Image (cartoon, rainbow, N blue to C red; front, side, top):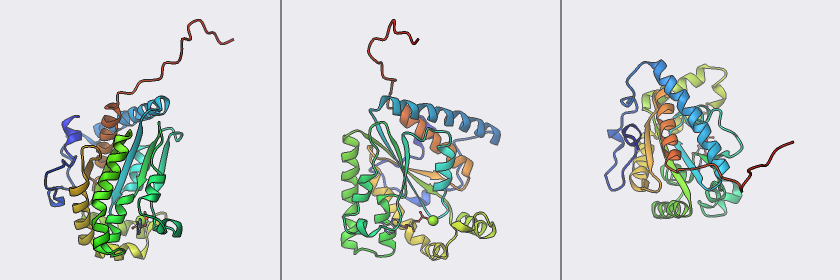
Amino acid sequence: MSASVDRYRVRPGQRFRLADCDPEDNSTFDGEREAAEAEFAALNDRLEALQELLHAEGRHRVLVVLQAMDTGGKDGVIRKVFEGVNPTGVRVASFKVPTAPEMARDYLWRAHQQVPANGELVIFNRSHYEDLLVVRVHELAPEKRWRRRFDHIQAWEQMLADEGTTIVKFFLHISKDEQRQRLQDRLDDPEKRWKFSLGDLKERERWHDYQAAYEEVIDRTSTDSAPWYVIPANRKWYRDLVICRILVATLESLDMTFPQPADLTGVVVT
Ligand code: AMP
Ligand code: MG
């Protein structure tokens, strides 16, 4: 994998600190904005082709996990990075406050139901990690209970990987000031106001608790089989570019080929 792709991967066994990651960083691209857009457009085409291949080959399963603070850009990434991919074979699973049937079961149950099948790429918009984030920050479960989830999740993801699922996890890293700006923009823009909720301000008060929770999650659950990438996300163009590079590199590493049907020589369509 190229250096620019590897740079944001969190290596297991190394103490991870969020403070070492600059949300403004754009150091793997030095050029004009137009050049970044051109690179992105080419990568987006490539992603489209690779997803087609994934679907045609039908042997691999790909799980993309998206986590971020409010306004971090999860929706933007889904719209922009996956623009143009064939909706057949790509699915978004969004994880909200658990419903009654979900609450009546273990926390991984709803996530497991949404994992990709052969040939499928599934994007988790939020994920099972909420059970170590919002649940921890708001004390929705006792610490004794959620603490064990680091191990559960590692083991569960390892099982998925062993059974043929490729997992990539992205944390879209924005600064607290960038979040202030984005929330303000939502308030000011009539077409964005629907996304704003007063609850977002309450959550913002817990910024540091969330950052601490994210830091431990990323530190303890980035593995070779299910790596975390911490993406500088203050600049949307850079965030999308880096994510697209990582997805393309990940799909290329699968060495997929179009299926070769039985001998069709001489077959003519009349
Ligand atoms: P949104 O992504 O803006 O639609 O918001 C979804 C909400 O669901 C967020 O406030 C999450 O914190 C919340 N949520 C997601 N998963 C869980 C969970 N396991 N327990 C409690 N709240 C959750
Ligand atoms: Mg929200």
